[in-house]
Image (cartoon, rainbow, N blue to C red; front, side):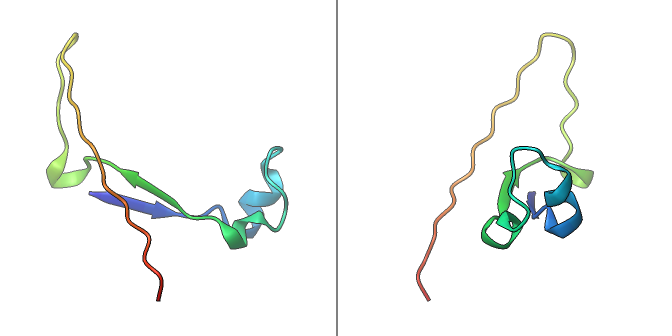
Length: 58
């Protein structure tokens, strides 16, 4: 599962290390395991995942 988000205007104003207009130049792409892809871990277990992100000109 991929989560794509942006803090947008209101959240950008509340972030101390984020300029008020930086939300227009930012996108966050996170790999995750949610919903049907959730992974349950017992104490001490590990789970690794990786993501490949490519940027293309268009």
